[in-house]
Length: 185
Image 1 (cartoon, rainbow, N blue to C red):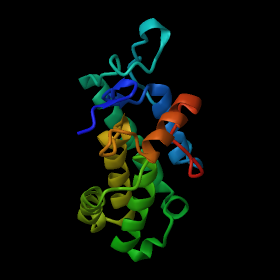
Image 2: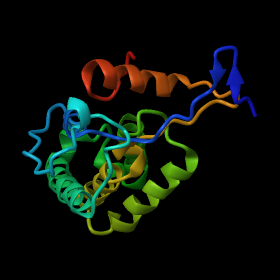
Image 3: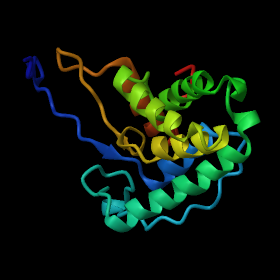
C-alpha cells in the first residue's frame, strides 16, 4: 500500500521488451559456447535516437513470429550440443531435465524461477522426453526463449514498492552492458 515517499509518488515500473541488441546479447550470454545464428528481427523503433524506449518497444505479430523462428533455430543448436550445454547427465532423464530447466530458466528470467514456472517448464520437458532427451531440451529451450519473462524485463516490486535485488541487477546490467546480469552481479 505504500505509494509515496519523501520525494513524491513511487512510479510504476514499466514492463520493457528487450531491444534487439539486448535480446541478441542476452542469447549470446545464455549460450556462450554456442554459435548463435544471425537472427532476422524487424527494426526496433528509435524515438529520439534511443533503441530502448519502453513505450516504443511493442511486439508486433511479425516480431512475435520472428522470435518464434529465432527460438526454433537456437533450440535446434542447443539440442545438437546437449552433452556440452546441459549441466547434468542426460541419462538422468526427467531429473536432469529439471536441473537444466532450473539453470537455464533462472539465467534467462534473470531471477530464480517460481515453483509454478519450474513446474510448467518441467511439464513441457516431460511431455517430449519420450521423443528423446534432445527433443525435450530443444522444445523446452524454445519455450524459455519465447516466454514473456525472457523477452520482457518484468519487475516485481517488494511490498514497500522498492525494487528487489534481481530487478536492480537487471537494470544495472542492461543499462551498462545491454545484456543480462552475470552470476556475480
